[in-house]
Length: 500
Image (cartoon, rainbow, N blue to C red):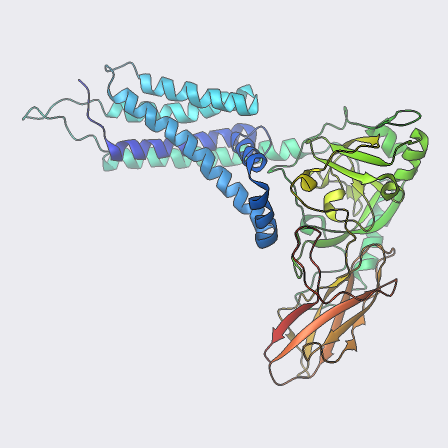
């Protein structure tokens, strides 16, 4: 006896199968590159047209990454649900007891997971997550005829639906706990922080003490969890410190290779350095300063004896960025952040810092520096970005839009940044740019390539436009003309309308 197609039953159990596949996949893979949905997300990134990616970076900023993840989850779910739906339709028309649809769905879902992740456990859990709901849906649809010789209704009844949903919720909760555990274990780092960790934290606290205490404005030094991250990856790359090495190779007198312990054993330096994303909006928040621990890149370059005009920086995740050799002369190889070991999200075991450059050239999970006279285009350059452009000065207005003080005055403020040229002054206009006044500046953290807090307090009783601009350490005033982030990063005066 076979049953006719059952749209409601098929949709219900296909949905359950898709969600169960995602849940059990997360339980075994966590939020790592072993998780089926993460690989789907990275596949989407790889095949997204450059124009679409550039639009998302400019218009959506960090929200684009969130939407990318959600979109990948939806796509991964849809694929599993479609496999389950086909399996259900196939199973409805087969003799009772064979469960051919469940077998088909499990094998196909598992095969796709195996192809994408190459992980046996992920393959099994995704296959089981899809196969079992299909088996339940397929078995429940095998009914007899009613008194008139017509097939009985096989849409899921209330008790069946409640039981299946309850089971799915249980699987989801257990999978969430297990997946979080797997994620934390995968990202755990068995390495000590910098040897002078206590003194580094004291330096961070001293820099924080210089804060102007502006409501709504970030402190001078960003906490690790608050420091922005932008990556082409949905999950951070997991690199084993025991097998990690950094090689300086290519057109060099002698190839230099160091492992993680050798890097940590070398005399270290500690630098306050800021990073700004090239896709940051003019008044966005993809700009942070931290205290980094590492060694100057010049030491390694001198040991290798570079004989080329450029270097390619290759990361463990396949990311590549190319720069002229001189850009690396003041560069830094960091393995610590704010007195702690460098987190995986920021490039553990080590990352590159190049003073005064956009964030996209500061490569995380660095593995190879390849000297060449014919460099390849980097990831962003292939999409049309110009990461080699000089980072322009900017004074950001991060109050929303102004704070009202107890004495009735208004206060505006934010952070200013001018790359490795440093911030000398910030000027503020409260009449749309007609007249200008110097803002109060906080003492900057030691170093040039850092952000600097600013604020301006004034009286106003009518709607007005506040404009801010910075003057860097070379005397260059922030340009007024606005430009979009693409292709060379945003520039222009920042303004906000204030209505007391």
